[in-house]
Length: 120
Image 1 (tube, rainbow, N blue to C red):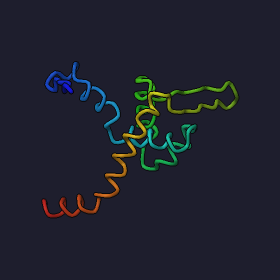
Image 2 (image 1 turned 135 degrees about the horizontal axis):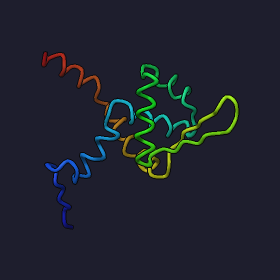
Image 3 (image 1 turned 180 degrees about the vertical axis):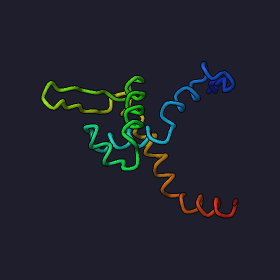
Image 4 (image 1 turned 120 degrees about the vertical axis):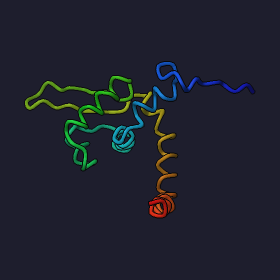
């Protein structure tokens, strides 16, 4: 089987850099995992569930994820307006990969924190 070569040095052309730049930030992965658990959520429900994210950062993060086609936003014409977010099929395809990363983090956090304390 032939290995596919990735050009890491060209930011615009590197799929790994391009994709990780979008959902490798502090909040996007949490939003994707949260929507993977809850399926459909309103903005304030996400804000409350995540806790320490500002409304502005949550807005920026969901807009980026929406722009990449990872989540969808549905606006209901009621007063007050109701907006719901959910993962698209593309976003759902990330869940097994993110679950693996999440499991790895949970299994190794103690060791990582110990290493960090030794490093300082």
